[in-house]
Image 1 (cartoon, one colour):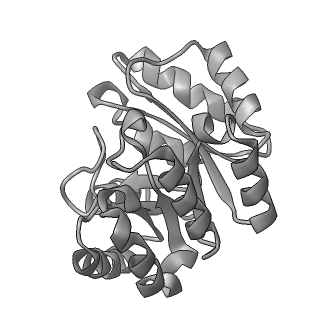
Image 2 (cartoon, rainbow, N blue to C red):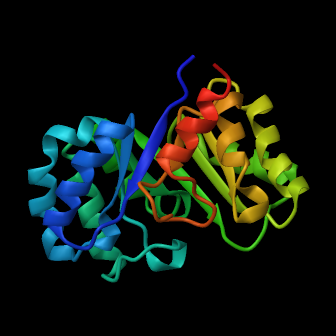
Length: 223
């Protein structure tokens, strides 16, 4: 089994993004394009410029209240999500809190037939196991691709998240924890069934993130 990586690309200029994307795709199976780091007016031209690489891209437009950088209105953000969907990327990351509150957006994305990654991030804590399972069930109404990330303050927190893989069924689950206590879950998730793990090219884009080179070294220890 090949353990896959997804490099998070978070650049503020279109030219730098294209350059970094090229480097990332040489090292990694997938890339996550953090469109929220770009100025809103630059997003359409970037989509056009990287359209041939979107088949290997997880597209994310994270709002500030979900830990992202997007500074526009929620109406603008949803409009851009719809635009990205028209390019049919590998996955379009849409927050559970966004899609569950907007039936029109949910219906549009369903009709677009874009593969969605429904995500949930808890930056404060790791909920109880039963609550996490309940959340997955709710999220799976919108897609078979689910991402749950929590803030682990202890090893037990991290272990609790990883236990979700034993209950995932046919869901494509990406579940791990942020922070120092959860760092190892980014690696262990691969061995438990995660389709890929998020990595950086060097400087972490998220707390506790490994670089793509670090992950490859760890994976190769098994060979």
